[in-house]
Amino acid sequence: MPIVREALGLVSYHAGNWAEALSELRAVRRMTRTDNHIAVIADAERALGRPERALDLAKEARGSDLPRDVEIELRIVAAGARRDMGQLDAAVVSLQGSDLDPAKRDPWSARLFYAYADNLAAAGREEEAIRWFLTAAEADDEDETDAADRAARLTAGEEPEDDAAELEVDEPADEALDENDELEDDTADLDDEAEDDTVELDDDEAADEALDDNEADELEDDTVDLDHDGPADEEPENAADELEGDADEIADDADEAAGEEPRAPESDDAVGDNPDDQPGGKAKDD
Image (cartoon, rainbow, N blue to C red; front, side, top):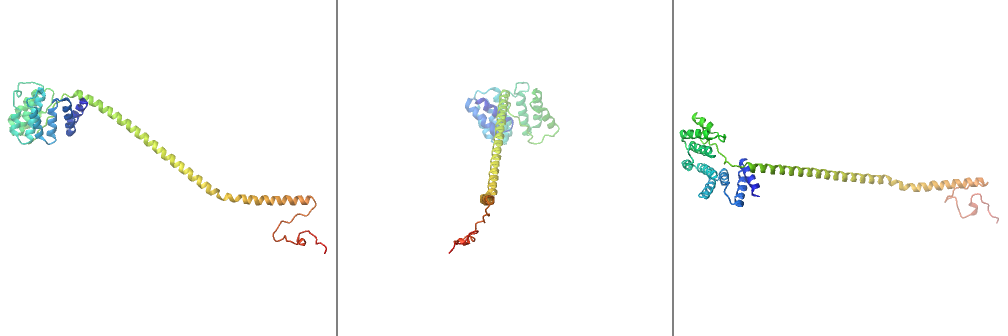
């Protein structure tokens, strides 16, 4: 939407983000087919070290039906671009015109007077610069500039060379800035929600990892228990031997109760094929 990009462009310009401002405001110029921000675009080109492009934009707009305030701002930017290119006298001349009248009090008068004094100072014409700085201070009812301070410093001989206090292009952008503040708030809310979702996701992942670790520990404990239970497989044999011994004792007790001698335990060595060898047996007659 043009209004959104316009707000972003103006905020970027006032924040000194020249490249972003240039990109956004060029897009607005294409979409709206208007030159309402051409002075800002030209000033951004100049700030990026491309004064010749700023002059090209000023030439493009020459003769077009620009609002008067935009036209004055573009003249100020073009004068600054000429000064950047070392054309100091040309910068001074480019600002001269019917609007450069000390008696005028148009909305742009203070800024035009200040820019003219600034370029006079850059060209070494200090007395004229002081006079125009004072004129700018008188016209500056809203304290947009430091014109009075500049005049005082020049009078005291404290103004160093190239001490050019740059003016940002004046833009009636309050509504656009308010809308951009709302957009920034919405963006911040979205960022907070995204961060919360990320934290929850991280917590879920951590919980899953902890659960996997616990399951692995339980599986390892079960394996160890099985290893310890391994020798128990031998217990059935011992149990069988004990049962067999108990059966023999019961049989012996039964024999005693019947008046018979207890049976001797069976042994492979004690038992033979000859009946005479049987315990308690009698040999047959020949």
